[in-house]
Image (tube, rainbow, N blue to C red; front, side, top):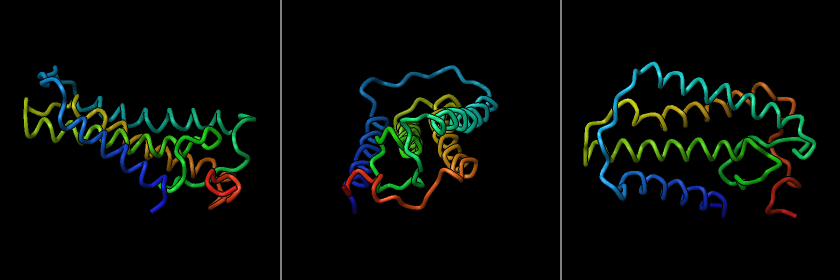
Length: 150
């Protein structure tokens, strides 16, 4: 297992635990329509296509981007998909922790508690959509772009 895989997993696990065991007792939130979850999911995809699309033309961006991989540093400014890949899983962990917390400690799970899950899934689908939409920028592996091999 690479150093970055370990770091990513540790940060995601910490997020899951922190959101599953909140420091203050959770309060019942006013519920929202399920349609809002769908809107957040779609927003994640569309926003990511736009943000990464702008980065495609940024001169500070890498010439080519690698497909997201757990073993790559997610904080490389030159490869935005690595960061958003990590961010999507981070949001999923946060949402899953909240769902676990609500199911175990209460109060009852509401639609608004599932927002991080919907947004995390939207981000991950957006990352996949970016690899398809910007396929000409993608490469399987570029050793010189990898922060650990120089």
